Amino acid sequence: MFGFVKEKPIMTVKKKWHSYAWIVFFIVIIGLAILCSWIYYQDIIFRKQEIVSQEYVNLISELKVQTESNINQIENFIDSNKHSEYSILTALQLAKVAVEAGNFDEALSRLQWAKTNTRDKTLSSIISYRIARIQLEQADFDAAIFELSAIKVQLWESRVKELHGDILLRKGDIESARSMYVQALKTRQQGDQILKMKLNDLGHIGLDIHEH
Image (tube, rainbow, N blue to C red):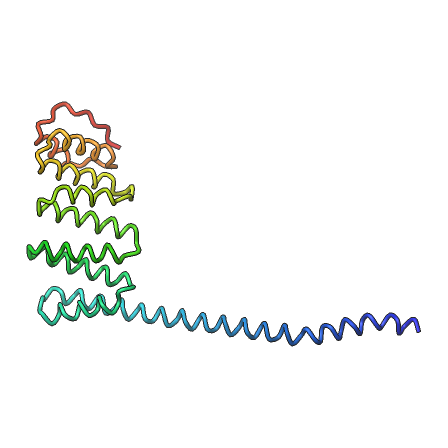
């Protein structure tokens, strides 16, 4: 009798385990299925990125020989990969080609599109810097200064101040340009001879700069 009483809890536990075993089994199966699906999905994404990457390399190499067919091909690539940073990089390459051809309006349009569509903050800063340089060439000084204000990456601080100085110099504000050049030189990790020459050209004498 006492043996039966002792066995009863054990039998109850066994029954409970048996009833839960199937639930555990199905949970494991579902978990494995989700894991396999995720791995498969990641593999598809990786392969697609490889294809896009190779296509990008091929298109950029074709930019050396500019034809209407090549440009159309590149345009189609950008449209087909709008959510990829490769479309941004391609737009930057087209902007570079436009600048080399002296077509600043087209270059500006390419860069503004790239800035609007990129999700990379560092790349966005690079684009803003290039936009400001083009606006400087177009004598759109206020727009260039405003564009520079969008650059928040600290590594770009010295370059931004130098370009800001270039813009102010073109505007005829020599003292403000000098101030910007001085700030740019102080925030630069290594001495910059070109920047020092810009200061010397402004007739600055006896500048005591602490180079870092």
